[in-house]
Image 1 (cartoon, rainbow, N blue to C red):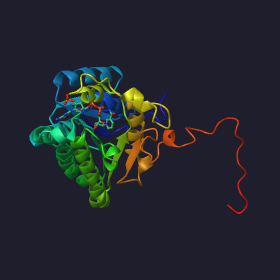
Image 2: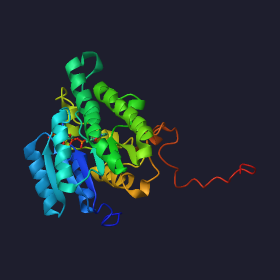
Image 3: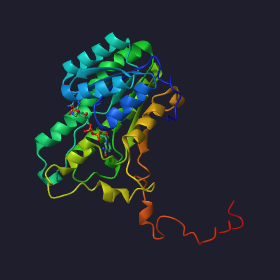
Image 4: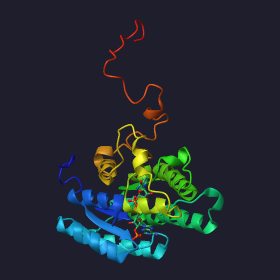
Length: 286
Ligand SMILES: NC(=O)c1ccc[n+]([C@@H]2O[C@H](COP(=O)([O-])OP(=O)(O)OC[C@H]3O[C@@H](n4cnc5c(N)ncnc54)[C@H](OP(=O)(O)O)[C@@H]3O)[C@@H](O)[C@H]2O)c1
């Protein structure tokens, strides 16, 4: 059951890079089920076709664009396709990303550049391609999918840490530049989500290491890993008129795991024992 009214995105079009898998697919599904026409843009035509078939079977109006976000011409064609089919680009979700485990001291410049090119430059290309249309229509929403970790360090993923920190810089900068055109720019930082892409990216170069996602769940105050649907629900909210006065934020959808002191590290554990009575509020404390 949805938390949102069925026609929340009726008449809107949403472009989602990397929308054929994982978190991107969950967002495409939710935008589509709430009335949006969605365009999935990524590299693998087979994967796009399979995702589009699944979405259309659910009644979602869906188009696909084979597109590498590093290639400005392919991005421009994806935007043209969206305009041809839906007449506007109301929402752009910059979700496409690459990631793989790599110790910083042996990370090659090529690895670093690959991730920065996809995550950061790709976000620039896509946004740069849609924003003139948004300025013309004096409305639009750009949503960047980032990570919370750049602020705290993202060990073994220096390329992604640098790229996503850059995307956060773009998020606030664009929010300030384009607010006067009715364009909002926000970010979502999903918590660890065991998508196929994330699991295989963590395993690169570490065949000996089982994915550590399940261990990670123990550090999440809300007690479980993230699901793609968690990010999708937040995206629906942030891109809707319910968030009309919200721009430039990075919304952590991570069960609290990025809070400065994880609950599990507090000396008194994760909660108050059942047999401890609530303390009286000391007199004079308000
Ligand atoms: N999963 C997590 O734990 C987690 C946590 C925090 C943030 N995130 C972020 O959430 C987003 C989605 O991640 P996910 O876990 O759902 O991973 P995913 O399933 O691997 O999704 C990545 C998508 O990006 C596309 N892509 C990759 N390179 C591309 C390129 N050059 N041009 C166009 N599309 C490209 C891929 O499709 P093709 O290969 O077919 O191009 C794929 O559909 C990413 O931005 C990621 O950084 C994920």
